Image 1 (cartoon, rainbow, N blue to C red):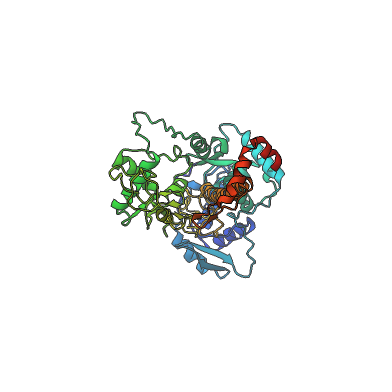
Image 2 (image 1 turned 135 degrees about the horizontal axis):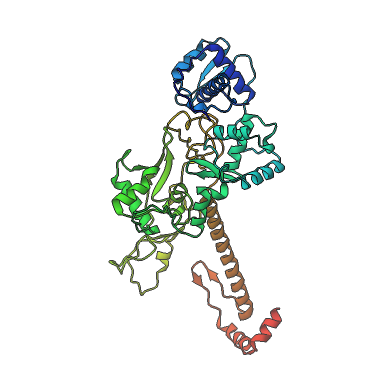
Length: 471
């Protein structure tokens, strides 16, 4: 595309703003302030291309002068046909008075598109050449590029629908992913590479020349060092870290590399939501969009081993959902009944761990008007499904949450199976012994001497005959 040189500043007029808003209505896109800024620059680039006798797409809209959002808002307020509404943060939106708002929610998780379309999309992306496979990183810019290419499977779709299709291709269909800020076929994306490394529990190779590799933190080191950071760091406040600083602090403070893939996760976000970190930290979203790592309140889970310095003590050890008491005893002696009664069983694991907030935090905003665009995909788009400007969607469950639920269900099933098996064994023993001994509370009733003779006669019979009789 031709670059812009020496072009005077864009002259905003009420009529030009009104035409741009109507064009966004036709595209089924809600006219947020930053979306409107993009559309105005697109129209300006088109006008420059026509004035130079070039094709309409030969001038890059990014080469057009930027527009002050405050100035644009004032111009919109001057138009009697427009209504300006305040949105989250400093964002605003513009609607046509008296016109129905039929905007498409580009962050909606609902997939109303035919399966044939998705098959054609996957085939198109798979067959792209090296020069064509790199697409713009934002939904809006990527949608405009695909429309410009005239992709067959998008024929008849509005620009808003194409934005929605791109969002679903990233978040659900996994046919698009990010590579160095650009969208590429998923098999070439950073997400796919990290998933493979996480599956094989291998670190990601960055291939930096001259960089000295640091030792990778183990599970125990990751827990201990993160707990230490949360108790010593005060930025942005005591007991709180920003998620983006965690790895850097591990390198600078402890000379350790915190690799989420070595510990079996594709994202640091998912690693810190692992059940093994629930007593160490919780994740929350700040109002500015940053993810914060906060120190968890309550007892910390201790290593599942006895302390070396106190061989005559049982420490309070939390092994999964079982809490053993802290009482003095000799290791060589069997635990007493009163001690075993103090063992706590918490199948839900809620009493020892602080759960995460169930409210989905808002997504982060970008640093410029392009990255903070309400139709763009921010860095944490794969974590949260929508931006504050486009409405919040449901948060997809983490694989670790499903794993924790499966562990709890397995514990309950094993305990139930244990009691069923114990009852069956006792019943079978009663039938074999022929007496009336049974367990009552914590005491065992001993059979009367009169039944001993019958037991001796029963035991004198060959064992195989007994099983055949019961069979």
